[in-house]
Length: 408
Picture 1: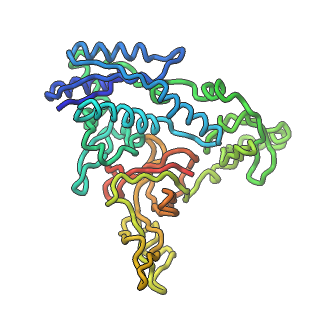
Picture 2: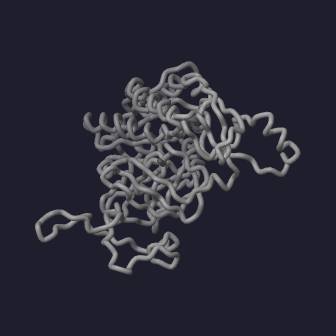
Picture 3: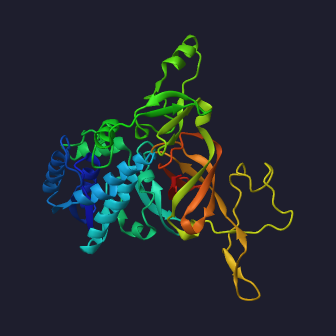
């Protein structure tokens, strides 16, 4: 079996190369060149990856995706921030680059599968292949991989998904890998550990605007909406008058958080902690990996047969109640398609940031044709920022990643 292994120069992909070779696979190491800039570690990382390939006597290749990465990830990153969104470039990087361009290249060049050093697993659920969380809870990376297609799962290998980070490092030390203790890469995929605020300032500049309270009153100034995200509690300045009025209370007044952003009018609104909690959010660009896991439309209730009170079986508090699925439409006596149902819902767990908590939620379609819906959380969630990913996990088995969407 021929496997193209994405090698970053780090310990995870390096150990993956060893494990695949030891298992008898025909491995080719592939370094993805995606970024060039002062301070970039790409040259050092490429040399580290090459050393491992030479030690293992496996072929090594470099793929240049610099222009594609700039277009599909970096340009979109800046555009989203200008719109007042809080994007997640690591999701796009994995979708467009690692399991987009790299995956396609491997399939076109006769490889049976691609492998990476992600902390995730490919297993089975419901009789079909499934994307599963990595064993290491703190390192699990399914949040970034949620858009991997069902057809791709037959051609993806995650050699270290069943290991913890410490087990990976120990196995690397046992094999004498020079990078066994190399620090993990941080920051933006392929760009690395940069100061995001400086990165935004260098490319978008500053655009001062008003800070508003929940009543719409101007209480301060900010330096540009792209420097702030929902739930942030610093980085903006209160007007001297506001500081003076509240100075004697500064030790008992709760902190102010960003609760909304208006890129068009260049304002941010701040409020106290409770204002950052939301129990409902609209989502877009919804992706379900498997049609059989995707909710269709529920049948219209009979007269008097539907209730939204807390005792109803359709309430979000009944987290493990079953959703009823049926086709969206059927034919009337004249053979015309007519809507026979209302938007379906299904219970699931949702994660709104990498490594974050799993929240019990109910998913509902708002406009299935345009991939729009909403999530209703059982409890209030802090920091729901438009542009971030909401990743879905199965209600009865939270190891199974079902897909995800973008917060609206």
